[in-house]
Image (cartoon, rainbow, N blue to C red; front, side, top):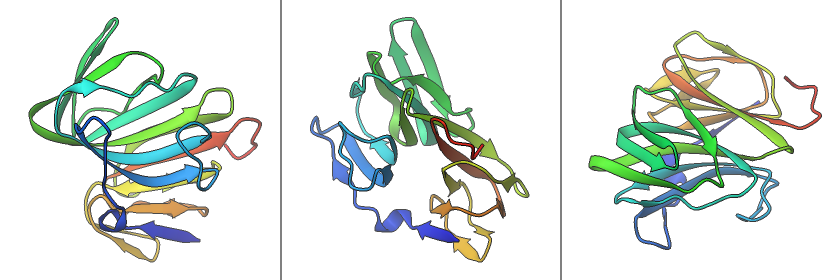
Length: 181
């Protein structure tokens, strides 16, 4: 069964530093906070240059959906845009993000290292998706997934095999010790 998460229905919460906003999409366990989640999926709007929040022991993957974002830190200097592959990094590493020529919208997946694995990748129309403990598909263009009509940036939370109807981002969380691969 699929559950559609409309991005327009997710409240935008301002960051403490005023540099942008975050829309939480899903978290496990339900109602977990920033210190006790096993995995978390969110969308952010980055409006000014600033340091990423540090999450020691957390693996992060980020995909730029709109705009261009430069990430820099110790041994890191990469620029991402809407055509870039999702970028994995250590959530505890000191990293700064700099939007280039305007605000950036990104998708951010986080998983506690040793407790959960996270995968994020771009898919084209007709891709079949199965397996995992939690699977999300973010529509990069309006499309139909299963019985559901999605607008751009809407998300399907699915527990059943599905086929994409257009370009999408797959986010798959697999709990440590799980046989659902």
